[in-house]
Length: 186
Image (spheres, rainbow, N blue to C red):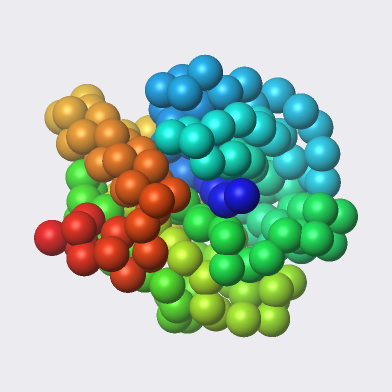
């Protein structure tokens, strides 16, 4: 079984913001495979199903970004799942909008959701799909930037990035993360 955690903030006011691309990618993956993410468990909304014959659990923490680790830890402890089977999908300012970067370890890089997961799991080693949102223009407050929607001119890049993230998630179910990184970190 694989469990995929998409990071974001709950609530309609955050739905289309840069900080919510993790939720957007999970929603798209769920749509592709007819999985409903609607069960409230472990401080999250969860959807269970099968993708290419592999059991998957799609998890959207409802703790707000900065406390994402609470939901991850709660799910791990309750269901006794292995961290090696988790993939976290989230926004990354150090990656250009429209691009994805896969990593299997590293620091939080200033991302509070990842910082929380590292705190609650006690490790920086877990699979990640970073979805690019680029950095804001100088003088633009980071918090305002990540909580703002994508510009109209970015819609095509956003859609392509979500598709690529979904393709990477699907590929990772039947391949090692190293193979997935080699294919998608082009």
